[in-house]
Length: 255
Ligand code: PGA
Image (cartoon, rainbow, N blue to C red):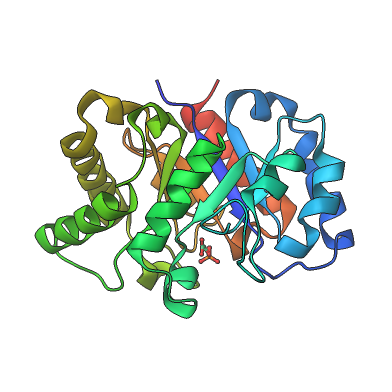
């Protein structure tokens, strides 16, 4: 039985702690939801520390949108998983489409980050997805290549820390998410690939969907056995909308 998980990324849309204080306070009031569902927020890097201070003593999880591939060393401008640990963060997002495309992160770099995040006991959110709509066979081939290379360095006993955020790149930043059939068929493919790679050990890995998720489309996305949650962006930046998504998750998956 996998625990449902729903998260939100602020990317760099909200860069003043004041813009997020009320947001996280509202989320922390949702105690019965937070008991049943893993809920996380990924503030922009510059607001992470002040927001962490507010969240302390709540089961609302928080973390970083990226980490350096090493915990220490000569990596100017990077953020260390050690700093995240130090402020009580428990989630790391790795390999988002924007990191891959704009910052040229390759599969090898992503594999190192995934391994490191797992070693620091982080809930490790690995983002994968194809650039354009593909038929099932081609999609499977591409997702398998990504999963195989990105999870290449993970120890078997860390697999339960992994959450796969399936985010078709063509559905990020749009008005509407991918179609229900498309998402569910991809999640089924991902489950099959994970089984091929790790057999029974793969059952603990959660799979969620991201890409233009909103309070209007989350119920149709969540209504599927292979789908363990959603990863929300712009349409959750209003806290009421994000709470609505959490409530839908709770009624479909939790309780
Ligand atoms: P979006 O972002 O919901 O704003 O499309 C999702 C994401 O990039 O994870």
